Length: 350
Image (tube, rainbow, N blue to C red):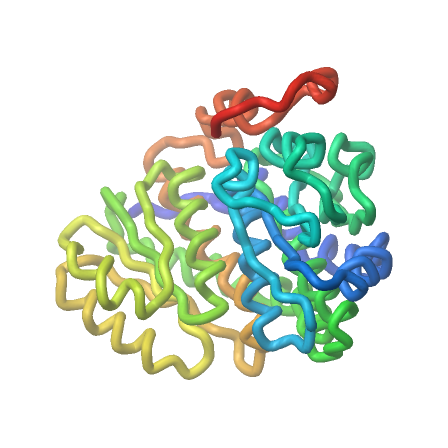
């Protein structure tokens, strides 16, 4: 694959500002205390963390972090579409914690205004003037300085930092808040190395016809997001999975012209085993580095820049525009709901 200018894309420029915006989000901490108090005071039901796409991955990161946090209330992560279609039934004691950059996601607007909402409603968003923000009992804000490209970087990683910070405040777990605070430094340290890694990885890489991304434990979220990036930005069909899930299912159907991206967490024998399995299939296998000493709950940030740099390279090699993919108009027509529609009866279906 020929050398291409990743740094000239708007998507990478957005990425380069992300360490600063994540730090600013945590320094300002607008609404973090209020949302944390809402979570901490919630009893006896569940905290239902929800969103769609990358926002659902952040909800999943919150759920995974909650497994090691002393929070008395159980956390579950549910895609917003399951809530909007009554597949997952909310109880009157449940607190909905929604993640939505725009604050206008159709599924969440339906939940906030529909009969299935009877309990408290919290929101993490970049848009304080949004429909969802007006409906929420507490709102924690994510700072976004610029969004030059369609794909979110600053909002996604900022929301992940907010999730750890708010959960740390609500549970009294100072280690979670400390982990959130290290995310901006970890992201900044990766920028140059990610470009070099992607250049080296792409030297003998042809455009893959499909890809598998796997990550261990908390890196499941990073694997899901990396697969989404490959699909959204580079048009490569990709699946994200947890390491053991992949090693017992998804890694057996691999072959030539396919890509495997491994996202290990620290010293990771499970990832080593999976890499060995995949290497014997004829697929191209790449392993992203793990920053030494980083809290594993920061995997969402530790494994973002390298997959993004590689994805942009693959997109440019195909002549694709990584900043404005052709699917965006369709996304807006299905994912968003106009403010003037909110007072109408809730929509049905996905």
